[in-house]
Amino acid sequence: MKIHIILVLFLASHSLFSQLDYHQFVGNKGKISFNKEYSYANLYDYKINSSKEDSIITKKLSSSIPEGLLTDQYADKLSNNKKDSITFEIIMNSRLLVDINAERICLIKYKTRSNTTASKDKIFKVVRTGENWKELTNSNIEIQLLESILLETDVNMLFQFYNYRDDPQYADINRLKTEVKDDKGVINIKKLAEAIINNKAALSPYKQE
Image (cartoon, rainbow, N blue to C red; front, side, top):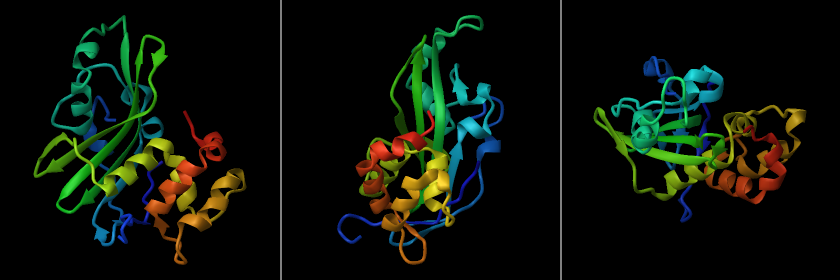
């Protein structure tokens, strides 16, 4: 399910990779606003759009792509995997790409699994300037808001917040829509992040693991 969401972001002061072919996951153009309009945004669900082999990474990937930089973090553990004995996996959940100023930011939500023990969800951040991707070690308020939203939701939940029609299966999300949207139906990211954090218990049944 590929979703393009028109969002408004405000500062506090007013203000899978396919292990076969990464290019099929580039996505289409969308819009996100943060006191101004950005030219590109794409939300991607690895679990729905990828096959099992593509959403669960078991080997080192090329460092020229965001998912490859993620595997760099776990290169030693991935190197211990054998064809008939997988002891470590990176389980891909979702990815958000957004252009901020002259840079493309990529947030990847994932977890790791060693044998049968899985970690909690994590966010890996990278940035592209020119043609090269590199790990993003610093975050501004804008990126922190997007990071917290992606970490605490899934793609379907975000679609339900965006969806102008109320789905009766998502009563709590329908209730919160009025708190996070303006009169034109545009989502305010700061309000959305606060609503998600403050209503974790109510929203947890909608989050797919």
